[in-house]
Length: 345
Image (cartoon, rainbow, N blue to C red; front, side):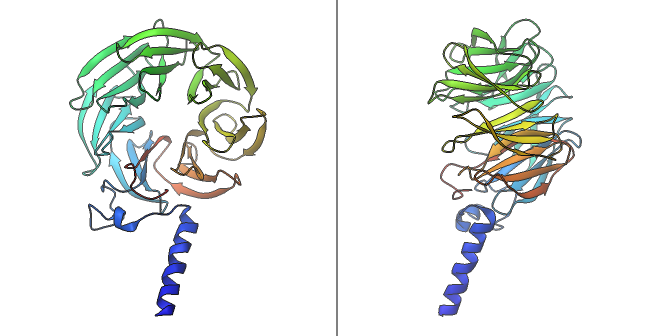
């Protein structure tokens, strides 16, 4: 009996060490018999949009395995989930559409046309609306999550080419990077109105909102910089010189680090948020694009567009621990996880 107990403990510990997270398998199997079923709502997963083969790869986070694939429209870019995780929405750039995906059936239920080259997407805090940015014009499209009908269309002005949308914690403001006009637009989401426009630098791509410190970080692809701005006024606080072509950016909640992808340098850099120094660089990553943490932020997942892989990096040692083969030319990454379900993955 003691041998059986010892074996069980050792197996459980080895699973936690290998995956880097603790997970309750009974939760994983709660709504399906197969614990690795790609369509179960309780599974902790990443959805990876693959530009070149018009698919979404589904990664099971505890096992680091691709457990499913969803065929979607032409050139999927980014995705977002409803709070129940039953529906995902995917921007399809070439088609000029947004797809509504049933995450249990793993199929597209509905598509709706928006503006030219839909790219970024964000969900309202109440889950009732999605905000879609379109690189082909200066619009932000607000859609109802139930039937994808248009609630509003917000013009941010000129030839802005809206890129990525970011919601404040209270959901009352939406911040949008504008690829060509080199600005960030501030939108009042209660009235769906543009309230401010801030010049930030050449080719703003992604933001991190740090509301605790009342600042935001922006990657500037042509300036080869990450800049820090005041979140109330948009005034520049400082500029951090980086490697070429900074694109994706995430900020650790407890460690003093920014993780930044650099498409042009095939690298990911780690920036100290206190000194603003680059403290580590991981090289030889093919066209890294979007980045995402697991829930305990022990790892950062790197979407490598040129490698057709997602690389997993330890956020304390900065070592690459795993690489997962996905579809062709992956671009976006989004975690699918119900609150309180799935342990620390």
